[in-house]
Image 1 (cartoon, helix red, strand yellow):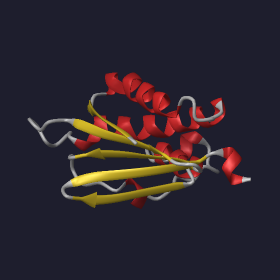
Image 2 (tube, helix red, strand yellow; image 1 turned 90 degrees about the horizontal axis):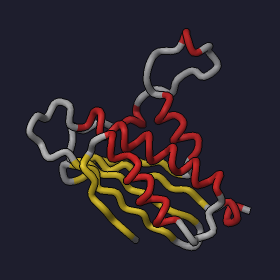
Image 3 (cartoon, helix red, strand yellow; image 1 turned 90 degrees about the vertical axis):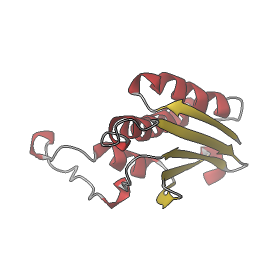
Image 4 (cartoon, one colour; image 1 turned 60 degrees about the vertical axis):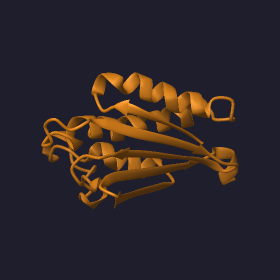
Length: 141
């Protein structure tokens, strides 16, 4: 298990993605699955950076990221001390509608929910804790 703290600023996204990819390197992950993980981590981190601290001027804006590997897959936990918000309560967008007819927002979290094997949110000790899990393709079979 590895853990790091990042300033919750969108320009830090490349360092966040590098941190997750480095944790997964050498553990038998295929490029397609790594790309899916990157999109999920990007979506959650950008949401933290863009919204978690928007109404908390002067707050220390951070995201703690934990990557925990096991024999079957990986769990990534993203935590922040921003405003409480559970994006999983938001209604999924109607992806059958043309893009111009859909309401704005929610598509990124929907993609995370569809691409991960497990997605959870909890508010714990004044922190938003967003957990995603991906099982290795070989472990699913």
